Image (cartoon, rainbow, N blue to C red; front, side, top):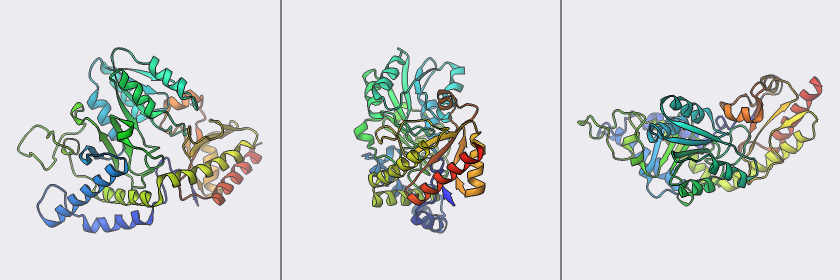
Length: 383
């Protein structure tokens, strides 16, 4: 079996993550912040340790600004819904995931307006200029995916933040595809809000997400409820992280996330990135040699692309190609529209979708050769 669907969720996980899940079920059985007994306190201590680990990993001085969520979708919705008000305007890119696009579209029914800024793969200047042209006097927020989950296109996030701040506009960055894959420093980049998945590049388990709030007072919570603090009050606590962590935290998932970050610290994000990108280059070169293979980005350049790519074989439905890869070769990839309506409209692949291959440090050269050989065989069969 070759797993090449790491943009959806990474697999396999480091052994330490699996071991911690098993351990955490038994060790962290108490509800954190809800009781004073030893098991509850152990759970709370583990959440604190992971919060500190996340803050250190992304270079955040105050770990209380790190909020745990159920995933990147909840993190994005928390800021978009909690920061924008009637009459506000928001700029998003044409590469946004539906967790952004659907949210702003729904809010447009109730007085929020939005503009989709066109991005240009490999041309930061044109991309920046298009974001600038999308600003109006009502613009209060920009929402920017750092890396496209369809093409792997990298956007100039730091420069977009700098542009936005010139106009006193805040930026929400979606790093679902770059967190743990590309080295990031939230403080140095001066980002206002960041949404991250815990189960992708950070090697945690599904059901975990991260939200960073530089200025939490600007955002209203998405969820209200029990926090274990100020329980006599009917108003939501303002203290962090309680304000945004109503309900019982996913302690087991958070404990596993800490082990995923430990793995990244030991291996080194830059080293992992070089390994993954070398595999991407080889795969791209192999596929580019085949006629009627449609590749949706130029030859990979690590300034402009992350280690994933989308392709199609002629006009064959992407789902059909993925099914053949699954059934005959036990190669697991993603096909279809990848929850990214805007991107597929941009690529004109709304009907066909794309076959997406996304790599991790657990892939290797023999696997790349097998994938390339399998795609070549499918091509020969159909053409």
